[in-house]
Image (cartoon, rainbow, N blue to C red):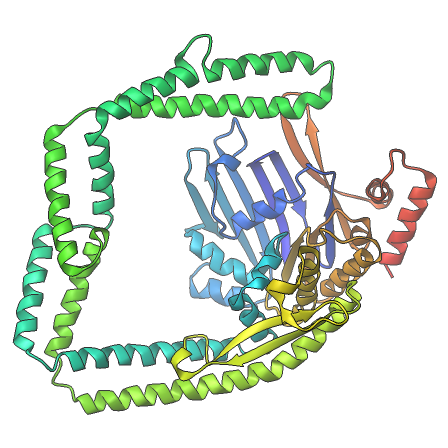
Length: 557
């Protein structure tokens, strides 16, 4: 389970440390307080792509650290041991994002790749964000959900592996058939092509790099002239540059802050614009200063690109892919040299590979069909309770022809719903509205909680567009999930927040010059006040507090 999230210098967070426990933990806060920032930060620690703009202004780097605890038989522990990264029964993931754009990743203090974080993260956490339900519209996601539900994921991987083997043998068979002609002519042609490519000796990415350099050298005067104008307009003109005007507006607005503190957010925004303009100007100045003509270099580049284009046209590929062609041609020669292998043997191998694929794919289709029924019943039950009383859900398994066979098997998976009386079942992507889709997505999460391998589930405002009695049911469903998995829920609904065992409040603080977000766990009285605030009203009354108290008591039973 997730034990600790520590964030430093990330967006509006200067430093926050959150200790988490089992069960349902809820996070609330006013609009704009940054309730989802912690979830975004956790995503970075789990391998999401980093963006230097998220580093807190005025700092060199942002750091996100998370600690997980799990048993020795957890799949994540097996992965850590396999990669030599294990550390008893805890796991520390750390991500550092530098303001200049680079980032570093660590597992238990050892440097790793971002892909390593992503791979390990899939074994530890499932983040269900505000737009995650959109993935349900795609057949691949629907197929994955059904396979998870029916515990057929391993069989699905076996089918994919068998299909790949079959196709590889088919490709070899095609080569064998083509090689039944004049072998010597093919050898000569391939050797000639290889010699040309080895003489040119193109490296990966070289064509793209040369084209960029060629364009720059060929238009030095135009680029320099345009940059001078841009820099004058944005930064260098004393009285009318964009930077000067924004700076003047910044100072003027700063003078109004003591008259109205609510201007702090626009003031921060102007400050960011001023900083970005200055940083952009510095970058453009550096680029302009390095810009100079080099006709000899330009001529050499044009000659090399021309030769690359000639070879690419002759081989019917793009110039940027030439570096891959050499190995491909050498492989073709090796295969031509081995044509002494019996064509009949290869034909037999292709037939055997196809039979194996068909056998496992048909078995997978049969199991998917059986599992679709139980998934349909379980999800239908949940969506009815989530405020769609006439809703019905079904997972359809449609057969493919042998010509349509692929790595996913011999079937298509389609989720269908009917949401109103008198309507027919239709594809989820065409029938459900945004709010309905969100509830169906949550219903699938509830049903999935029992078979998900990860021990921590995070819901980031999945209750958007839901209110009233349905909101309370959503809270109960999240609480049900939390009886089997650790659950962290970012919510704006008091009906959901009241169901939590642990309640964190995210709030934004400002001194008029800077803004920061803080997170603190609420005790009993503080929690009543926070729920009262969420219930609404300009003034919190005793009646509101009594209602909040009742919601907490009801949520704890």
